[in-house]
Length: 555
Image (tube, rainbow, N blue to C red; front, side):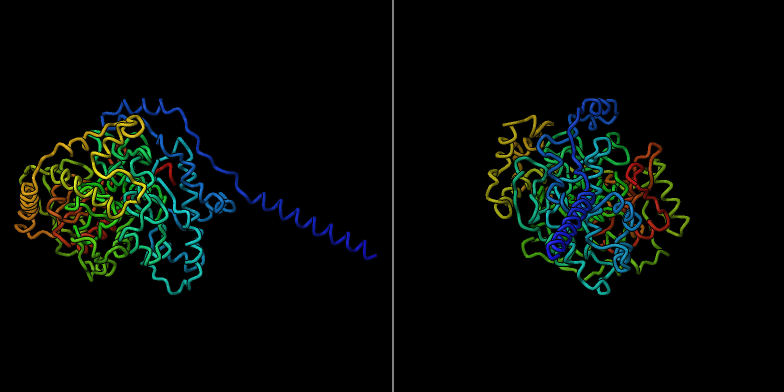
């Protein structure tokens, strides 16, 4: 009798184990694999475009196997199905940070689910050669377990206007501990760094660093006339509103594209002259280029210690303020870094639009999208003042970038790069790239060669910097002061060079689309440390225009 009972129990256990194993196998999702393809047809189609800079030589990287992007997290998606993904869409797609935080508080969404949603979405689109955007270079292998830790926190204590648990992509020139920092260049392919100051600030507030975004290699300071959004590591970033038709903008290309395509809640880019404003405008997202010094540059691969700054890139102005708030802080390692007590979230909600004066550049009114935006502002109560700032050149601008890069890159390598990075100077990078030009520099390295040839002396450089600052500030101030303006309104990155050397902040907000569907941004430019005012006015304009639309094939 005992023997029969033993056999019966054994059969029960075996049957139970078998059923559990079968259920597990059914739960595991089939692996999604990216496969390379013949790019000739796609490349030939770009040769027909009027924009010569869009005549592409390749789409995908010859260095990075895209499967390696999500491979470290593949097992985390074993039990995250298409059904799970679709169920969460209504809580995530196009939602701002406060809305997502509210969903977490209500128990509709967890931080772990939010992270898995984005990883699943990145893999879904980036593995499909008809839809891939090459927006992401790497994912944080620790991000899911970090999210699980945050899910243990009492949700009632979480501020909805915070980055707590929010998955954020960083441009791949910003240092992070768990991912390499490449600036898109093969020369830095194995560069293992610590966290940049702004990455530390985000982590201190329990943001989740989801991964690293593609970029124009060396922040678009390598080749002459080459496509924006291209890097040897990440391949060609593509615009979701017009894949292989519209430019992605540069150099924070991946950051802009990833936010536009809902691959993350928000991203961080960097700008020297237009590198946040351009991709934000081109991808219908909100981008802020702050005053130099408001955000630290420590741990970021540089172009120019004079003009470089990181900045937030988001789908909404409120998210921009939240992300900016999270990154501010005085950094003792950055000589330009300043302390501020401004709470940008509070300040933008205190906005009073009555009496605000908008400087409208007359020549830009020929642009129908800009003209419509101005009409909306006028009809909603904004005071419009047409201005005609005197067009002036900015002689010597390139020399600021050349000489700064010549000095700042070796300084970065000495302070932040890992010991396995063998290049020390611009000359070293040039020599390294010449060892395999087809893979490392298919568009050449004309700008790097120009850096070496630039013989501007330190004394001449200081004079150029000061002269250009005076010239650019006069360009804006002659109108701001004369007409008592709160802001000057531009398009995209049209006046980014002036804002750069003047060291003035600029905010771009989705303004609409051309007849062909290409996005444009309305760009607000103000005096130093006027970010609160720019965000106030940007939030107001966003509320009356509501121009951002999700890309059609990425909904």
